[in-house]
Image (cartoon, rainbow, N blue to C red; front, top):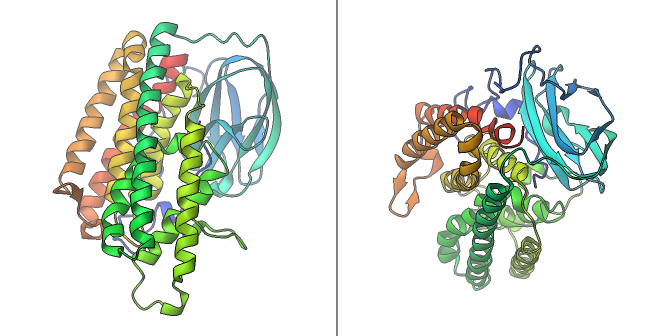
Length: 399
């Protein structure tokens, strides 16, 4: 279910954002070790596959494995923040990922893989196609679920219902937004922008699983590759909150507004249709929950996601809600496998929500630029406190 994140310059993760005041520690990779239930061999999972990721190499200890639950222990032996991916046969769809791995740190990727051909990839600097190699999964495909299959099936059903509802609301809201935008009702379009996008943000790992749609719909201007055409939500965001001092001649024309708005709606309809065909696996749900917290740490808490509208707190809240639903869906499984972990995750979700609620105003939130350095740091600390136990959710369910 995961899809590669928009590349973020490592310096950005630990530096002051240009448009928001941000402490150097906010949004950075954690320097705390990542605990795991079955360590005892120097931080490596027993029977797991080790990955040494440097700035120019990606050394995977095996090129094949039997089907079932795979555990990759990824150590960043380089100087740049890195990511590790396991791609499916087409080299685009992702079976699993772990990102935001700081130098010297080890993070774990747990996935349930069926027989087939895969590709491993390390991405130093969290950008580009990565350092890739072929990986083969063999066997009968009868993977051990690691928990009561009935509970896993129920979890998948609950999460599927949630995603279906959110993508339906996204489509309905996008229709309203596009209608207002094309009609020149820009105040109305600004009112709709953040609440409608929240439906995307809640199911972002699912939406990002479609490698062709995500960059068309949600790419930021800062992440455009040379020669790449910019489309999607953030293009229209910039047009609605046109930067002070920017030349008016560079702004979209009315025909361009209609073109890009219509494309956004068409892409949303495409997403709606594709989501209807998806099947949900426990590792995808658990990894997706952690992925949403990574989205907050590397984009929302830095103020870079909504750089023109400064509606980042709406996205922040939606990412947290989406992660919470994935966790709640799996909670009955966690309760049978590691109830203590479930209680810690629950407590830290509650603490993070309490911090977010400080900035509510009516049905929405204050502008992200209204937050002080101390307030941003407090949010960042709450995100990191939740991200650590949440990173152990997949292993608790499957291992």
